[in-house]
Length: 77
Image 1 (cartoon, rainbow, N blue to C red):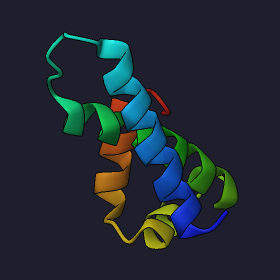
Image 2 (cartoon, helix red, strand yellow):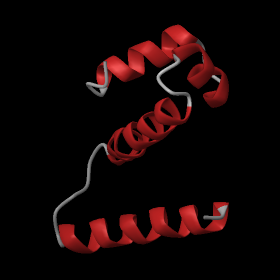
Image 3 (spheres, helix red, strand yellow):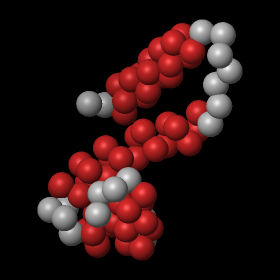
């Protein structure tokens, strides 16, 4: 999947979200999107890294301690 395709999926999902809300006011959209996208990213990268957190952190471009914190936040540890 190309970068544009991922962006298109996110854009379409957000448009659908707003349509589903109708007249309701949205809130915390940024946090909602980050949490929604972050978990599958972590799952796929951890799988690719065969559970090696140091390797996964390197692939993600983040500190291993940051990775551990995010894995805990998403219930992946």
